[in-house]
Every structure is written in structure tokens, then in C-alpha cells.
Image (tube, rainbow, N blue to C red; front, top):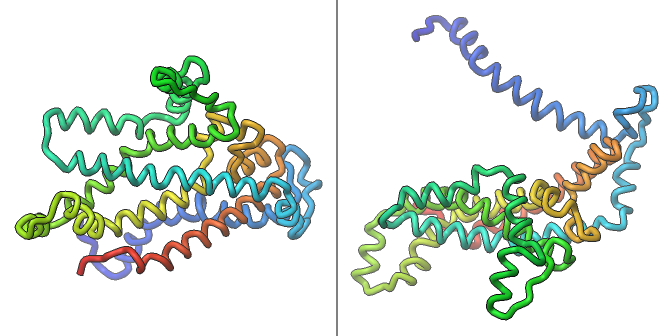
Length: 297
């Protein structure tokens, strides 16, 4: 379609951009602004508007004095320390396998991606059954080799590893596809030259594959750290923050305070603190990027 004239082009540009701009303002910028305002208020949506009280930084002060604040972020770090190495390892293995030619490859692609498109409710139910202390398949398998499995979801030590296993199983397929795209972009001549020089497959992987996909690995690392700090669905469905608060994390507390106790101002303050922590973690990662990420010229 031809659009003539500067005025008509400007009008067309505004018309085409309007849906995206309106969505950005209504669903992103406005909620951020409102959460910042709410964090300074004592606001209960079930009470009259006349009861809204400006409390300044009192919500933040209350949260910093919360006795479980440190534990919440330690639980997140515990989750990240287990989840990130496992998700990067399993995703890379999947990607390497998919980068090869073998029988029934299409069927394999479908099967390994099924967990990604499954809802967390379904995944949680499956894994709660698998991790059941008495009749779970994992404990049955451990018992077959003489190991007594723990009561995963009811044990303060093993509840978070159980959540991590479920999350890795669900997410691996998605990140494997991202890594597969990075593997496909590597020039095959690098491997041919390495084979001529007598490099083994392990040397080719460590000296060629890993350095050339390191930008993608860095992307996955940043994305997963951000997502890890915001972990919620898996924990809420599988453990509800238990047992005895062993899997309680910041977003779960935001949900409870906002939609169980209706302390919207306090919940908004928690969200802003969490956002600031995520920002610091992301900045640190970008600061360290140049030390190990290789960008091909």
C-alpha cells in the first residue's frame, strides 16, 4: 500500500504504533507507576477509599525488619545454585543431540518439548506424585538400589531440590532450542580444521562450541537469574512456601500479602525491593560478561 505525503505518512505511522504504545503504557508503565505509589500507602482494596493512608517509607521499613527477609533471599539463591547449572547442562545436552542426525528425530523433538507447553499445574501434580515419600516412583527407584528416599515435599532440606527437578524438567526443552539455534550458526569449517589438527570431540566442544555459544549461554544465564528471583508458580503449587517456610521466596510473599492479607502497599514495597535486587544482580552479570563471553568478529 502506497502512502503519499508527509502528513499521511505521519498519520499512518501513529496509527500503526498506537496499539503497541497503548499496550506499553496501560500494561507496563502505568502498573509500574501505580505500584510505586501504592508502596507509599497503606491500602486495603476491601476498605473504603477514605481509609487509604500515606505512610511514606513505612512499608519498606517494615519489610527490612521482617525476620524472614534474609531467609527468603537465601532460598532464592539456593534455588539458583541448583537450577542454573542443571538447566544449562541439560539444555546443552539436548541441543547437541538435536544438532545430530538420528532416527525418529522429529518424534524426539515433540516429546522433549511437551513439558514446555504443559501448564505448571499439570507438571506440579506429576512431580508431587513422582516425589511422594512412600509411593513416588523416584523413591521406589532409589529403594531398588538400597537407598531410602526422603519425603521430598515435607522435608525442609529436600523440598527445594524437588521443586528444582520439576522446573528443570519443564524448562529444558525451551532453552535447548535457543542453544540449538546457536549451534546451527557455527561455521562447520571450524570443526573440519580442528579434526585435521587432530582435536578430539571433547576438545572441539570445549575449544570451539562453548566459546562460540558463550553469548547465548550468557543470555540464558541473565534470563534465568531474573526468572529465578521471580520464581513463584512451581513453589506455590508444589509446596506453598513450606514445609515450615523452607521454600518461601519474595514473589510468594508478594502474592500472599496482596491477595490473602490485602496489604497492597506492603506487597508493592516488597516488589520494588525485589526489582532493585534483580537490577543489581543483572548489572553484576554484565560487568563480568567481558571476562568469559566471546563475540565472534
